[in-house]
Amino acid sequence: MTMCENSTKAPMDMKAYIDQAEQDLLHTYNRYQIVLDRGDGVNLYDINGKRYLDFCAGIAVFALGYHNEEYNNALKNQIDKLIHTSNYYYNVPAVEAARKLKKVSGMDRVFFTNSGAEAIEGAIKAARKYAYLKDGHTDHEIIAMEHSFHGRTMGALAVTGNAHYREPFEPLIGNIRFARLNDMDSVLACVTEKTCAIILETIQGEGGIFPADEEFLTKLRALCDERDILLILDEIQCGMGRTGFMYAWQRYGVMPDIMTTAKALGCGVPIGAFLMTEKVAAHSLAAGDHGTTYGGNPLACAAAEKVLDLFEKNHIIEHVREIAPYLEQKLDEMVEKYDFIETRRGVGLMQGLIFKCPVAPVINRAVEKGMLLINAGTNIIRFVPPLIITKQNVDEMVSILCDCLDGMTAGE
Ligand SMILES: *Cc1c(COP(=O)(O)O)cnc(C)c1O
Image 1: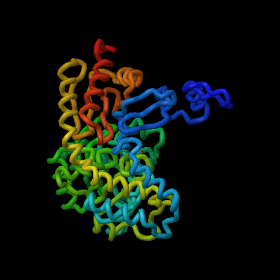
Image 2: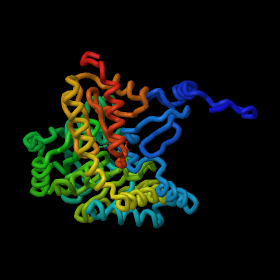
Image 3: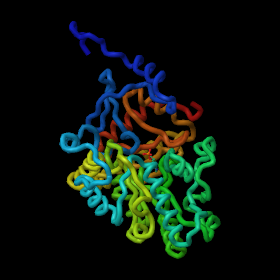
Image 4: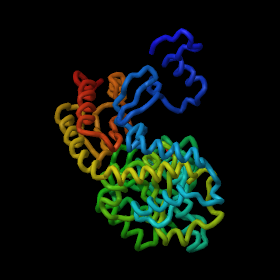
């Protein structure tokens, strides 16, 4: 940056912005000490122009990479046309986005939300209403999984399997029982005649990259069919092509009754959705039961619509299937190389390296060296890069990460 004689204000340096932020924003995050300014492809740049290779993608959001021209133009066009109108009227982007989302998911009905947590809230309401219409009772139970993460609102927190997140805010919604992922007996032990739904992430994200296995999902599906319990799959993080399937459950063909999606759906514009089969739609939320001011507004839906178009046009899923084995191979080589890395776990471009020690120092070093990574729990580095990454990007990531790890010992 050159100093310009007639500039009235020198650019605030990074530290000044950070200090200002720490005075003004509620301190709910321990943020990395960088101020990001712009993005291009898989790279982000801070306000001083320093480049960061981004293997985090705004937490599995920016699937198409930054500064995608077609996506940006679609948004610009929609801004000039219509940004918002109430859900009391129809709008074309919502109609188109819903149609396309149905097509890629195989689900029958869509409700657009502004976030993942809101999609979970809607899913829970739909399940409770479904059970209520069946027997007129109001004391139905939901089975959720230990180590799950479904969001920070009161309903989503109630089904989040991490007591540390839940406890300070109790009482949350009641009648939630926690079972263990991939442990059918633990689920059966929770089932009662009041059980109305079982909710899980098809691949647990925040909880440590734990995929639900095929046998478990198949058995859950059978149990739900047998007892008319609704299976809710949270695809907010693992969905949208990340596993090499549009939705991770499609890998096993175990279809949910209700599904949630968000994160990459808008690629940065806040939008989520809960979807359901016609069976649930016909016997759950009706006019007046649920609503949102912003949810499904034309701008957000124009984003989702364009994202779905670009997934198809740019063969994103095929690309993930092609590049993911390379990422897996490179991560496996790191497991071999460093004895303080225990193992790798994950599917497609949702991977975790499980360390025998806390990963925070590694991630901090990576930021200094120009790469963004996130953790999942204390000991896991999570890789949820933009879906457009290339082999060269993987190589650069591995090279920077090895730089950070060389000379490190498990005790560090
Ligand atoms: C991020 C996430 C959520 C919450 O989404 P928000 O948009 O942050 O509310 C819910 N479930 C899963 C699996 C997530 O990864």
